[in-house]
Length: 467
Ligand SMILES: *Cc1c(COP(=O)(O)O)cnc(C)c1O
Image (cartoon, rainbow, N blue to C red; front, side, top):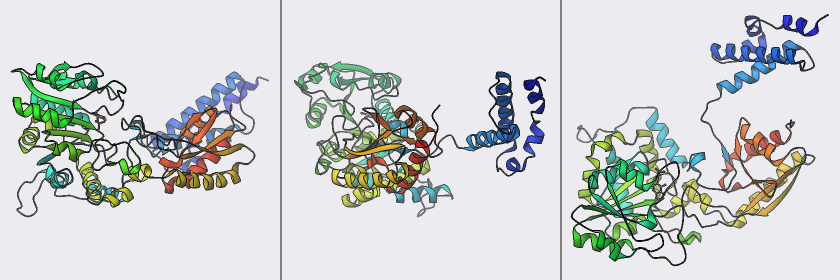
């Protein structure tokens, strides 16, 4: 008797397979069920031909496999991930989580019509910027404001609107690459602005800018070196000096702040970063910054400055192409409104709350988390609470460490690599780092509401059979 041939004959038809009660019970589009069933039968056929068929009933195992494949197919591609890396701003993980109130605002605007571009008092056409410009002006002291899709867009738009066809003078120490192919020289080229580099990598003086000014100069551009620091024998020109020079030669000054903060972070024990307000007070004509870095809001590019410059920016055709959508605007207005009260901002905005979490608090959280996890994983894993610093990430505060604690896991039945794989591929995906051959769970970036899910995913992953 030929066993494989016999087994091949027993393979079910797709139709009969989908009639099985276990599969009719699944709520999923028919086309996905058919695809999953076909894949499961094909996989089984392959096993038979290779002589590697699993033990047990063939039909049962095909049904189980189909089930698994359907659940994978109906899962959305973009989904929630628990960030256990301790790095606050991860572009790959979607940067800043939003405040509760921002979520509610998005929800309200998403499910209904809104006054996005209607002035309710006059009944006439309004502007979408009107919902945030007075807030932004109040928070930064600027004369006017605009907002676009992201900060890269804000930089492109401002450069194009203010200096297309002209030269923009930039220090060699500030020609930043942000990652994801955002390079200042490339953005300038795309905006039709001619780059005029001055100074050297480590030192640029006011006289370097002054010497480079000529009749084609359209802009003095300052860029915050957000993701690196030049340390040692260095010099750069403070904003106020550049404004003075700009005034003398009637050239506008622009600064790209990158992350951009609305208040001073030094009380958090963080280094002093330039705030937006300080830039405005120094007299810079246009400042740009991100909505989803340390600001802790949705992806957006915020632009503040002098009215003449903002008018030019708002009225440029590119502004229409880069315009912000209503859901982002709703979340941004709410996030900005938290900043009217610094304490409220720290309490409500997740990124600021995480930034403000003390080492003692993290140590306590780590200990109680470790205890809970230990109860369910005694036989398969050893655990230790360790001291661990985290970083801000997302191209902000590159050389700052936030002192804290974390849980180090040593799995006993698999390698750390296998464990992080299982964690990532779980239905509740978790991203964690490996350090010194241990898997590190840093709770700074885990929301308290996610702790139960995190424990379940860890237990499930540690119980997996490694192949
Ligand atoms: C992050 C950053 C950008 C890009 O901002 P996005 O919001 O990511 O578009 C531009 N310039 C600087 C200096 C940055 O740090």
